[in-house]
Length: 272
Image 1 (spheres, helix red, strand yellow):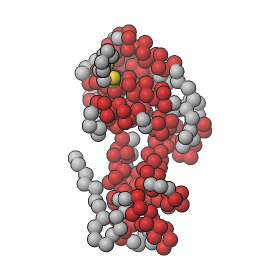
Image 2 (tube, one colour; image 1 turned 120 degrees about the vertical axis):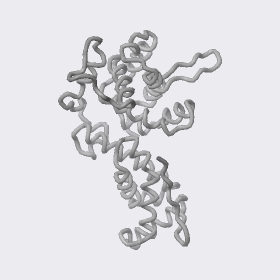
Image 3 (spheres, helix red, strand yellow; image 1 turned 45 degrees about the vertical axis):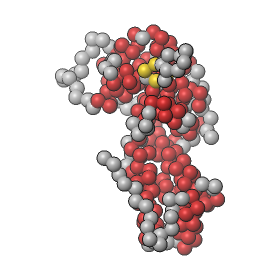
Image 4 (cartoon, helix red, strand yellow; image 1 turned 135 degrees about the horizontal axis):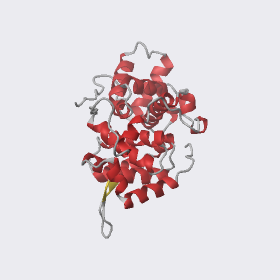
């Protein structure tokens, strides 16, 4: 389903531009008319539509992204920025990621925003890894008959199982695979997916990865494009989509070695 992002019309300032947004925010914050101004309403409708993809990537309600945008728009630093929209976008991305971490780690959002404040061992809910064992063990059968699972969830789980078995921390890499899988669905090509997602260092740091390790993880999950003298490689997502199981991926010795080597380079991420 495609959503049309509403644009300002008539005498409403063009808040879709950096300077237009600065003007609107200056007026709204100075007059305190956020709750009554039709311009504020139009701005928040636009912001909600603009940041819905970020919310969806993290399985959050678009209203959560709109709230993060609203908080960012009230900050003086946003008005002073060269590009206020860039500041708002970054705040929304980090805020949504922090919410997800807070929920999964059973901690406060404030602590989730700071990797140094997160617990070294993430809490595990009862039964969380039950499916992992059924995926890995060749003789395991689902209790109560065949499970009806969504195709996307099966692919993400298969990739996560492979990475966990080859040395990647379980909850951390599961979140990363989930993010990458949903992020690349909106990108135009395989190459753009690799380039764009590999450069998302803010997300990498929030997920606990250094930029170098994040780049290697993206290459494993998305794949490597063939170049002169360098053969390409299907990513884990593509192979899982084609039907490879976690066992079959683990049987690929070259792939398993590459994954273990990348996992061995995991180190503390530095907050930007």
